[in-house]
Amino acid sequence: MLEIIATCIEDAMKIEENGGGRIELISSLTEGGLTPSYGLIEEVIKNVDIPVNVMIRPHAKSFVYSDRDIEIMIKDIEVVKKTGANGVVLGVLNKDGSIDEKNLEKLLKHTGHLEVTFHKAIDESKNIIESFKVLKKYPQIKRVLTSGGIGKTIIDNTDVLKEMIKISENQIIVLLGGGLTLENVEEVIKITGAREVHFGTAIREDKEYLKDIDAEELKVLSKKVKSLI
Image 1 (cartoon, rainbow, N blue to C red):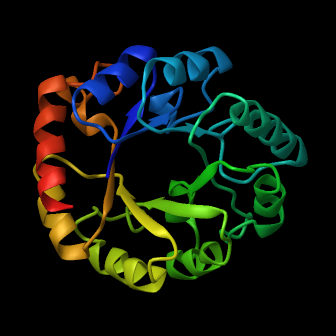
Image 2: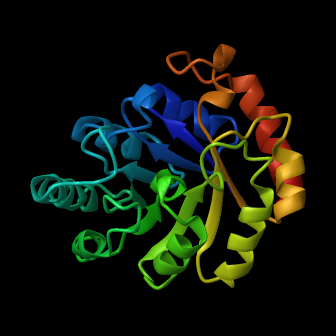
């Protein structure tokens, strides 16, 4: 499965037209992705047939959230449930870098039928393997988006990613993302055995956040991923 970030309706349509299998819909790519507007969510879902997972992230200050932040996230989840979206993408940490299970459970009570992806907040957790084991306990969480941790490239983190995939026991999907490129994706998939990959800036023109998705590069990437997974 090839998941691609979309920040606008044109991105979403281009992703579907050029081989993307699923969309992560966000705003503010330069800030790592924030909750998109209701209008954008509605328009994207109306115009594409592939699954759309919506980012639930109220600000980019950190992944440690106040009670008011959590209330906002719950309200956004309730909105997304009404749109026909496939899922939501979220993540919460405590100040000590552990998974914030208390607030995670509050959010999961509201996700209902939506697929849940725990995003790259896990890469900033104090112990990524232990954090992954915590997330595996929650049946509502279908996948975890990760590059294997911060401070190293995804290639350097392949041992961690392989361990996560082994621990997953096919109960939870390890979605690789953050540092993948057209050039290294084959190596990373072959080393780790990953079944899902996630791309953002790497398939945009000139590899720049604010430029359009490169349709030709996405076509090439899609063919490559489909041949490997």
